[in-house]
Image 1 (cartoon, rainbow, N blue to C red):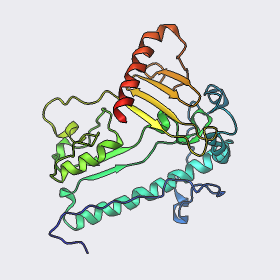
Image 2 (spheres, rainbow, N blue to C red):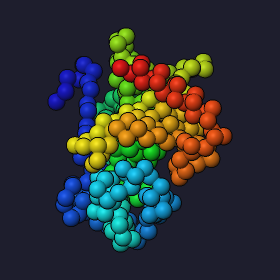
Image 3 (tube, one colour):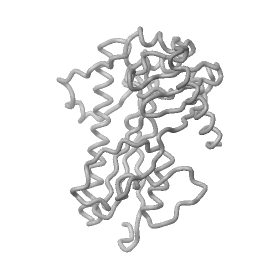
Image 4 (cartoon, one colour):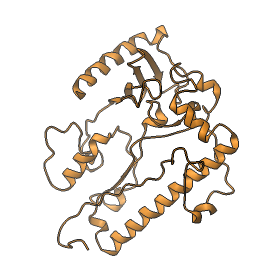
Length: 284
């Protein structure tokens, strides 16, 4: 029983939808969920082919890379793809049902309309895109993370809106601190994302961000990567290999074509690399 006269913070972390590595079932849903998605055909991503796998940097497009190893575990035949994607969605549905029970309990306790609910994840995921599985790399499928917020400070008619600005994981803590009525410490690099939907004035927000991911075990297995990301373009640096990529996300949202050596993009790439260096220095 929580004290009814005090505020509370509840953090719930699900293992779902993680796979259980090296287990033949990979995505281990509850038996009761077998009924879901039985008659559905899960669409295969446009870039889920050897053609796009072979367009990746050579230290990614090889069979020793962990993203490719796990692709073989889960997605290297049409039958596997359907089996494991349905299992994945069954786990996701179980998580959705569990969150629903939490919401109902908040309503039963009479605190739903006074509770900030933040749903997010720690990474995106490759479901066969680029011939890969899992995460780790700065392509859109792995880089993008879900963020769904219920904020009772919004009137009912103001809810159910989509915000297009970049919100980062460093913004979560400032948003919670601000909602609790406390001052955000100056050492925090993030911002209170509720400004984007609570402010009655135009909010000047970030238009790009710096990304980094260290190697895991070795540079051969999961290489380190860094990137500058905007809504329209992306610069990627694989520092160990000194390998660069540049994508025009407006024309190429699925990142099929690396344009780093195309002269017509030279000025844009130069500007992106300068901004990359600027944000990287600020992140230290």
